[in-house]
Each structure stands twice: as C-alpha cells, then as structure tokens.
Image 1: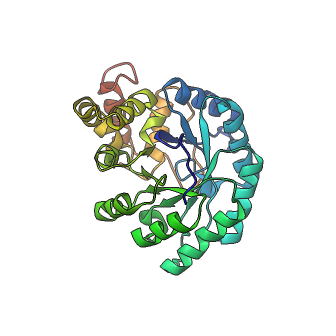
Image 2: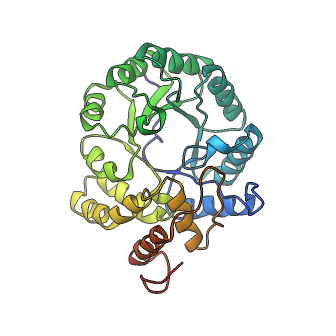
Length: 307
C-alpha cells in the first residue's frame, strides 16, 4: 500500500539556483528566493532539479543548496530534493545524503542517456525506494530530457509494489498516459503535473498539483491558480490559468532555465548567471519576457522597454 503523505498536494516550485558572477552558488539570493516563494503561498520547494541546473553542479554544491533550502523552509514549506541520476547507485547515494540533510522527500528522474527498458526503469526505482524505505520518493517522467518514457504500466506497478514511491511528476505531454495513471492509481498515490500549462487540465482529471517553473516568478498567482482548481472553483482557476499562460509559454521560449533566470533578474531577485553550456537568452526573448512580466505586474516600466 502506498505511504499516505497528506502534505504532497498543491503548487511546488522547481527552484532555480542563483549563481554569483564568479560562478559560485549565491547563498544570500537563494535564501531570498525561497522567502519569496514561501511569502507567495508556495508550500513545496524542489531544489536541485532541472530548473536548478543540477546537471552542472558538484555534489558539494547540491548539498549546500539542499541544506540552505531545508534550513530556510523549516516549519513553513516542505522540501522535495532532486536526487536522480542515470546511475542507480549514484541516485541511491544522493537520496541517502538528502535524507541526512533533512528533506521531506526526494524527486528521482528517469535515467537519462542509457535509455533503460521498462524492466530497467522498474528495477531502478524499486532499488531506490528499498534503499530509503522511510523517505517518500517522487518519480519524475520527462522524456523530452531523458529520452525514455516511464510507461503508465511501470508507474502503476511501482505505485502498487513500493510503499514509499508516493507520487509521479508527469511531464510526458501524453494526456492519455496521464489519464491511465489517474484512473488506475492505488489509494494515496499522487499525480503532479510536470508542465505548468497542463496543470489546470490535469487537476480537472484528478491530479493533485503541480511542480512549477512559473512559480519562481509568480508564486502567489501560480499557487492561487492551483488551489482554486483543487477546490473546484473552475471559473476563477481558468481565468487565472489563461492570465498566466503567456508566462508559462515564454519560460520555454529558449532552453529552461534560461528564460526564467532572465525574468528573475529583471525582477531584481537574482543575478543572471548560468553554468555552461547554458548561455543568456537572446534579446528578442528578453523583450518578450519583459512584456509578459509587465502584463502580470511583476516588473515596472513599459511593456516595450528593453531589459
């Protein structure tokens, strides 16, 4: 039976990692960004994921970001730390370390590059779950980045057979697959949208929330939209969904987290620094971002002002 986790519901932020101009983790701005999320009503924080540029961070930097997130969020928001790898042994080690740092759950992405079969995916996630039996595991299906899809059948098998695999972050873009999981999932197993633009529709089909990129910039608006949908206030939620849709789309006008980091810099929340191979967004993207932020009231000045 799936472990019951009542708090795993609502809007989670896939947190960016602020860097200094010298390339270090910007600890002060990271704390300030977490405070901005919590102040906007976000109850779930997800550090060290794709949006956090974890692929370019050292183990020591991952641990630093997780520790700061746990310490800053304590008593106010839950922390679901990115701890995935294409090596099962490494994913287990990262998950054990995250548990020692005090996280509430781990997010474990499907193994990338080595493209395992469904049997391999099942064995991978089962091994992780069994290695940290007291810690909830959220599996993360994002074929666009991993080149492998965790099928509905594999997800459901894991949900039924591994007690602490408690949820999936679904970013497959395959609505039929998502509906199959929602229809057949066991009691207490959660389904979270992995795409901002799918969240409203997926909650209407029975999903439990969203792991969001757009909530980095607009935590109050995004968390309100999700809570309205979860409460069945569909007209209000729909209106807010369409108001936010340009931001959801523009955040992926170039490779994420390029646009969201540019937007947060325009808002004065971070400095716009990346780790290669990510580079700053083009000027045309920057102009569009500023227009969208202006329309949402997230930056001052005219919608056509250059960054």
